[in-house]
Amino acid sequence: MVLFEWEPCICPCLCCFYTCITATHSLRCIVFIVALLLLCIEVAERSALNRMTADNLAIIFGPNLMWSKSRASLSSLGYVNSCTQLLITRYDDLFIK
Image 1: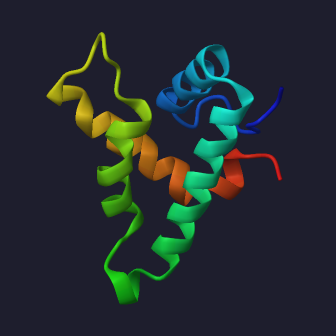
Image 2: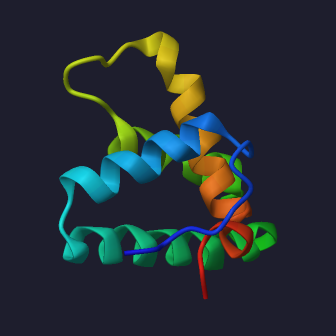
C-alpha cells in the first residue's frame, strides 16, 4: 500500500515513521493516524483563535504517535515533536491525495 509520496531525503524520521506504521499497524490504525493529522491541520489553521499552532499540536500528539516503548528517552522527544510537526505542516507534500 502506498501512503506517502516524497523525496527520500526530506526527513529520515519520516521514513522511519512510514516503515513503522506500515510494518506494525493495520490499515484501520493508519487511517486513524491520517484522520488525526487532518484534524490537527484544521486546528492549526485556526491558530489565531485557539493558539494551537502546528508546533503546539506536535508537542501534544507527537509522543502519542511515535513514542517507542523499548527505546523511549527524553532526549528523543525533540525529534519526535519535530517529525510530528513536519507531518502536520507538510501533509499535502507527504501524503498521496
